[in-house]
Image 1 (tube, one colour):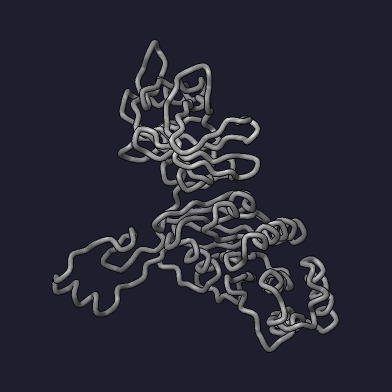
Image 2 (image 1 turned 180 degrees about the vertical axis):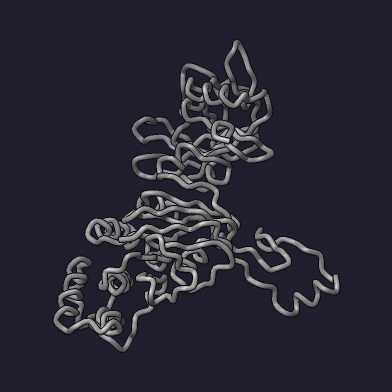
Length: 396
């Protein structure tokens, strides 16, 4: 059990010696590398990262590859030095504390099991290092194996286990000594889709049975949405938004969060926000959409002017073949049957759009290539973004 504070954390990787020489000679101008900032000190991998993690909370870092989420996790673990800022666990500054003294356990992407040891020996290893008595060691290993359902595999070696079973062993080795903090770095990325679903459920059950604080890293937003109490969305070394799964889905603060969270991703259209009869109205693709009253209020509170905007609408929030209200027309490119729903890919005003329609709502209607359809946006879930700053006009 532990609280974790990350305050103004920054990680800079220094320039290589050759790069420094070039820089001194002025041969190369300063530039951005993979969208990360480059300063005189080096490449800024993580910049001004601030987060307070409550006791027993499950926090998920999510973002595209190279956004700094694993680097941040490794700084918490002590595997990477912190360039600037403070890391506190239970109020104690940990920047210069050795990893072994932080009472942290980590689960890696590649399992990192000892191939010459049995499952039991792998689980016992961290306890042996701490000189735990034999009887206590057996008890803790048996409890961890019971929690993870690997009791029957205790006498096997890792090569005799499936990927999911190996990952259970790796998690078991992390939880067996009951650490204050459990860090997980993309632990399910090597598993197939079915096993990932099973292991997600196992991790959800696991966090109810142990008293650790979790920090979990993934690039899979489905994992983030299903596992996290709160999600930290990162891009280019910086935090974009922190919130519950529902908050980041319903109230994205910018176009990056709106497009990254949700599957399929949000549709974006060019539009114009105007005031008509004392209300805000969105002109988009030849139709007029009047946002709901709560959205009207947020726009008024911020004195939002008439302006060109980006209009965002999630595929599941678009209504097909609506008989009332403003209509937008599109042409079907692809219709994907997904079982309980159909994903319809449209060409709308020269842009691709996706609409999710429940199969039952379509009835006998056939939507083949070239079919014409009409649709509208639900006014209570339409999103409006500043095209220059990318910020959500309701929350900036």
